Length: 481
RNA sequence: GGCGACGUAGCCAAGCGGUAAGGCAGAGGUCUGCAAAACCUUUAUUCGCCGGUUCGAGUCCGGCCGUCGCCUCCA
Figure (tube, rainbow, N blue to C red):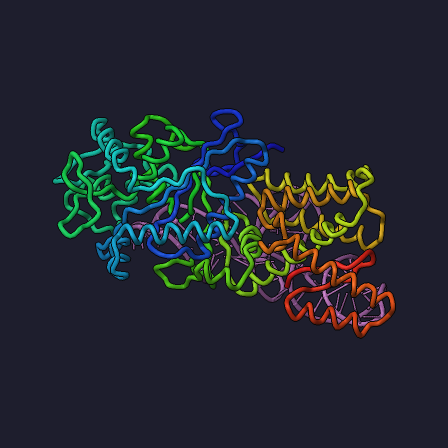
């Protein structure tokens, strides 16, 4: 089965077909950089990361654009998030932005999230946003009122097609403070006039102001990816109003579909409630990374389907931690055997044939709308099979071990990002391995002489400094705690 | 009030018409000088509740209950 993707626009799984064969243009709504990222962000960006990785695994050339929102959005108090952050920390607004942009990339790097090809900043694309507003005014989709420019939802009959809302429904129940100057309560701002105290401001044909909440995504997506992007990703909770408005203003401006596939990710919850900055129930990624390994956080995120919700708990995280550890142990043992197996022997065809079903199960799961929980299950099944082979003492040729390691590297490493290419955690692995091998050789001599006292003393002392020794039938394997 | 999502073992979570994946935790066992790791066995007659369709339903339809999200900045 070829890749199928659930498209929120049609509410169906559709066969994935990019506009241009072999190439995928993808846009994902990025973070507003006014505070540190938390593990809720990890769910979205790890999910998107795996999506991109898998598309590349399939051979697509992907251009992945993810914006950095550094033009403040208004809080319900009328305050600008970034300005508020600046006041709180007594620094320049752009200093706030710079600090948290760096923090964001630092966290994503730590999580093994592959960086987008382009990370455009909203503040660096003001002319493009002004151009968008001008176009919408010219085409009659927008109107200006005293320095503010609004998008007129009534001029765009398809407004609501993504979120399933109807303009009529928005009227009566709307608790939005109805601004007098709006022609329709659901009209949204494309450009806002800057009040005197507003620091972030730019000149425009409508006076000094700043862009509306959704303009940046349209401006930057179309600039770098064209009028129609293949995949537009983001958080499910932003479907309305953000994605809906983005879609409306984009299609009104270009007259073309804005995105062919809308891929939206479910929220991370804590005790069933969404993790968010405004609720204060969040765990920053920096703190999370002190508690859990990056691979465990990724495994935790990937253990649930990306569209559904996922509930965070210490217990669930530990389950993920223990789970990947098992995977790592298997891979580590395979690699250790590979290192001491003589460079002879091609892959045993019977083993290779036994390997195929796992690869098929994995790709089948991923092709079905990126079903990572099932893909993960295929990896666990593979690990069990490999462990069984090693336990049975069947002679595994170098070629076979190489094929097994290769499959883990490709599926678990390249695609899911939960199996490091190098398990030594950045320590000079050659030197460390050499040193430990010397100690292990000494210990093996003691063991051969049945001098358990000395052999165990070496093992205990290594364990004290965090080096765990496992004795396997064909030799010892070491790992860092 | 409107729109939407979800409710599967102690916990996390797949499955969406054919007789309950996977991970963690628990229990028993095997291997081992011991340990670690691993492996084997075991843990839901049942998928929020009540009806209906069907030879057959977590899986489709209707109703009810519960939890959550969005409708205002949030990924």
